[in-house]
Length: 220
Image 1 (cartoon, one colour):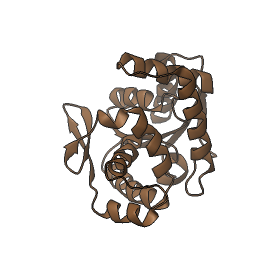
Image 2 (spheres, rainbow, N blue to C red):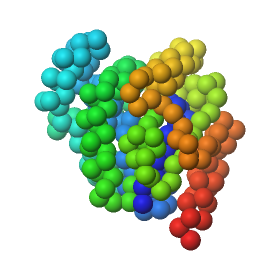
Image 3 (cartoon, rainbow, N blue to C red):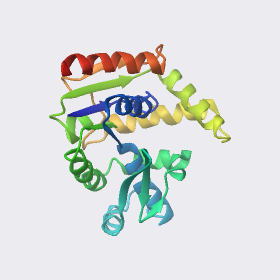
């Protein structure tokens, strides 16, 4: 079985996907981390977003792998574990920009589909239900207000000891929402057959229980 979870930044997709994967015994594939890894490579190589030819050339010599260490997913960029550094704010922002390029998305989607064919899998992202896995047995679209998503991101960064300003994060999220939903190729969009879950006033536990109940009802 394949479960697709889409939605904007900060809606809780990754957290919920991990919980569902644990409860159901599925493999969780963090597609966002894959795009972050590519963005990190471009930043390290000082490749400009507008220089698509250089992006394509760099992609040809870029390796993004996903491995599991005692159940914990690790993201390897050219053989190096970058699981922590790709969560930095600058990388997150760059990921939104570079992921809009068709050449980047096609490379990642090819890998995502191959991984999803091997086991029961949960994927989260922006275009999983509409583009990556259009035939997924379950499709969810998680959302929340911009203010709530900004607060969640602010708290996450503060807990990691990062210096950040709530209003700056809110502006970044609004810009990322616009970028993700307006890109020409595979934009952020709710699949016609996806179930919408507004997480604004729900706890993580409440969201997970709601979605698990729907999946288990179909399994039964």
